[in-house]
Image (tube, rainbow, N blue to C red):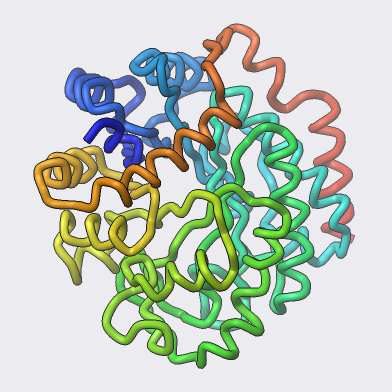
Length: 351
């Protein structure tokens, strides 16, 4: 099937593409790359890396994704502006200020060629032992989180960076980390709708383009499958909430998945359940899953809908890729205005 690779976002190994990565991405029309600190040496090097990635497919420019939430989850913090945790931002009580922070984040990552920010978190810090979310959340109730999620989504997307609301249907009610084990949520679905899902509803009303499915076992949604692999969970997002954008998985290399399901089996389950893009932090995992998927049986018309959805989003936000002019990147990061703004923000947080 033509375009199947558009449903994959892969990690890469280092500061520059390997021959194997070049071959896999270019020959299979892979949809995107996610970058981590292992891919960063300097701003100039990242710019060159992004240009080299985009050179691999001029017909369908690639998604280049990054986790830049602020606080603990912030890649490339040695060179990008350091943003405070969102819980602290929420405590200031100003959605306008949050919007201005989002503008800074979007402009800086856009300068290095990033077109997807895997943020904001729509999770509620409702469980005091929840260290995986904690200060990544905007607040401890859905009203606060919803208000600031809306500001951040609009800030990113008005600046031309795709926002990704995560982790659906909400990672707040658990203390376990899906990076290491599969969290189980015993909360009733009615309560989840009235609390945890509310920020996602606000994100959708703010026209968020992408939503990430969480690796959570929510008993009242599906007793057997985590939400990332569950048709019922995807149905809530598509049918009940009316989300028409792109659904992306959380990292398929997380132990919540790899310790409980086969890698390829989980990949196909996610896609068959309604996910549009499967994301892998490890290149080898993406390659293995893609090669098995393309040789398997799947509903081509259903998968073509996913490809069309992905390409539509790319056309809207990327169009035809214009190579970064590497010598000018540094001029757009940590500008005098940004440094001054963040210094004032730090004073407000300290007072």
